[in-house]
Image 1 (tube, rainbow, N blue to C red):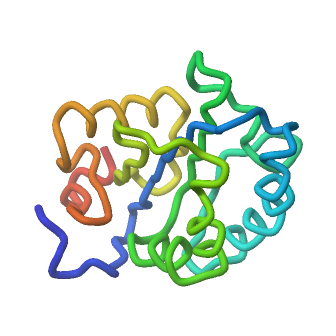
Image 2: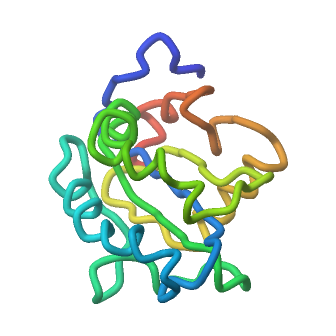
Amino acid sequence: MDDRTEPQGTYPGWHLAQVNIALMRAPLDDPLMQRFVDQLDFINALADRSPGFVWRLQTEEGDATAVRAYDDERILFNLSLWESIGALHDYVYRSAHLEVLKDRKLWFEVMQDRHMALWWVPAGHVPGVEEARDRLEHLQHHGPTAEAFTFQRRFAPPTAGHASA
């Protein structure tokens, strides 16, 4: 089901999962990455207090920069849950996060493959790294579907009957 008619809607019993990856131009301890690293705590705290935020992947350090989901050490991996597409969209494009996003070319290579995927999970389910990688790969190979989609091509979650399954 295409969700373009209600892109900001919430769906009881469902959360929106998002994964994004980025290919760093240099290791995190390189001076080139310093401004990015300096903003991590602020941006993560902003996400944590944003309306509709549910959860984000993090280590004991409070971020996910130590998570290595791929063999390439330069790939940063971000995974989070939100109450709705609108809540995530507002955080990404209508908060101070946008300023960091605008500067991304300073710190990250332009990726040719898909680097972000969205999908619905039953409330209470926390996706793992492998599930998120699978969704990103699905989007790369099949384009936007209900299994993995984008902000530009959105899908509603499965019917309420499947929410308890």
